[in-house]
Amino acid sequence: MRFYTNHHYTDAREKDARENTKEPSRTAVLNFLLASFDRTTDYLEIGVRNPDSNFNHIIAGTKHSVDPGVEFEENPVDFKLTSDVFFEAVRSGKILSKDVKFDVIFVDGLHLAEQVDRDIQNALDFIANDGFVVLHDCNPPTEWHARTTYEYHLTPARRSWNGTTWKAFQKWRYNPDVYSCCIDTDFGVGVLAKTRKIGISIQKTNDFYEYSRLEKTRVESLNLTSFEDFKRRLV
Image (tube, rainbow, N blue to C red):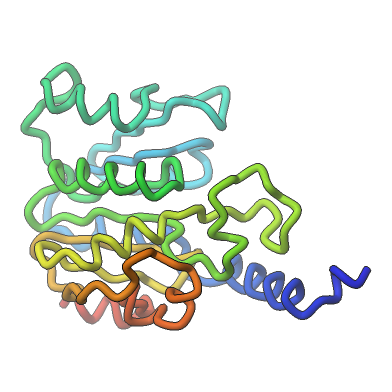
């Protein structure tokens, strides 16, 4: 009982509940970005799990989905592959076309920094010059949400898991070749762009990617912004 009434526990539960009720959802953000193009759009989703959670609600001219099916046995996706295998197959022309360009690529696969970093690099190779790479889970509200192991549910985060996605996103925040920001909704919707000036890079401020440092510098480190401010940046 003392554990459940501890202020660290109750604070984390409150933050988790608040994040789960924030609007807009990642789906709404993705549809907003797709609607911002004055052309028929191409959309790619990496890490689908149950398509009813997001993919089926995306509005685009062409949609493609990638998932190895680890977390959702039915796995009704276009390409039942890991993201690494998928991108290599595209690059070699075995899938789609090695010249394919997407307007929006949504990365929501394995939430571990090393994998997310590879997914970002691969995605940037296949987005249109004015396109967007979008990431879920970039703003974990507590260190429990940012744990490396999903299966450890005996924390205030319970089954909410953002993993270490934030570390990969912050690494790209240090890269002057891309623009980036994180919309403060739905556990952090990170957006990266090649030419759309949504946020300039920053000097490296967290050499060892420590969560305690992120906690103190969250707004600057992630370029955390409201959805309304984000929309103004695109004008």
